Image (cartoon, rainbow over the protein chains, first blue to last red):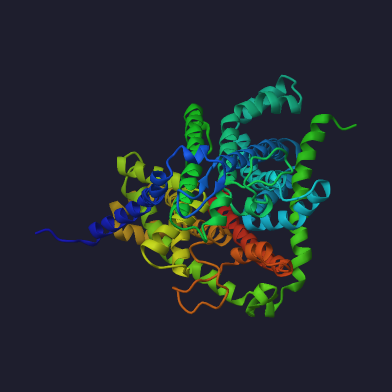
Length: 291
Length: 276
């Protein structure tokens, strides 16, 4: 007769745990789609790009639902942050591997790790009380695309720096020695041997940082001013997709609420594009990527 | 004279260090003085401008407890299954692994939307500590599972072969040999998960809610510490002083947790944790 022995029971229980953990992604996708469905039907896909502005209402026929300014806001803030954080992060890793004494490199790595552990709401708070007033003295109003770019750059810098650190650490010492034997200077070794050899790991770090910047909510919510507009200068306030969800979710009803889930889908689509890119990079790099 | 490349590299490192010191120094300078026993235990008054963060710490602890009570058994079970019971290249193992990778990349605000739709509304839990904790549990699962898996993979194959040769059952092998040996990995995952959950704000705004009273049950709304900082600085004029103090409490907690994790990783796993 078929009997349950503990081994079989345990195996079943563990399989259920794994299935439960795996199914969460499907649940998230399912809920997002089903919650955005009413808006997609009542408003239609095109109005999210063609409406005059973002003035949502619970009744789809009364409101306007243009997401594009917020898509631009998200893209601009992310791009600026990545452009700032990438060189700093890579140079940070170069510093701790090739320029700093081992002791200093150790302390420096700890600093980067600590930066990585500071929560986004604290970055946002610091930006709000320190950076925004500084930017206001330069050019009012203060809460702006620039503030968002700076805070995001600071936030994703540790991600990029830690990944770059691992990638540079993974470059075989023989390559470095060969470069030294050829009489290359330290800087030449770094730029023509080490960084090219580590490029897939560097790229992975940048992709991870970009993903973090796109999805970041609290910090940009606190420093960007949250005006829905396509900015014409870095001192203009902007609102990102993620910030929009956090701002309006509390009081949104019916079609408005559903439209916020649509903006969540847009956000997820942007991340999915990035993950696809990362996947391609990893496949190109083969076993070298330190993920 | 220093060469330009050295100037560039040292300049970058100096910039990063300066930003770090500026941020941390500013927080400590403005926040540390207000922290005393009364601040940590009293209830907030005048919308948080005065008083302390007692109930908020309790809510934060409860949200964390719910999160861990759900995610630890589920995560450890899944990790054991993935590393001991299935080869990574079976369809099921690959599917679970992949969905965990995707889950790890989902931004926290999406967890907020999902938690609001599933726990608050569909399951009818409303804005509550339970909803918030469950939402966070979904979020920290990938971290827990990956770290536990690493811990288990670090146990040499000979241990498993030896146990099989001695005729131990799989359950027995797991409990008496594998789990104790993999404990550091588990603890690292746990600590990192706690860190992620404590730092989280966006996923909690519309799952656990804003109420800053002492929670009476898990079905009450409770305000997490991170959300308290957000609310004080954005919505309450004159709340900055207490926001500073709360931020210092949160950062000190998180720094302690991160140091703990990298210490354990350094010491037992002989490698540095790269999970940022």
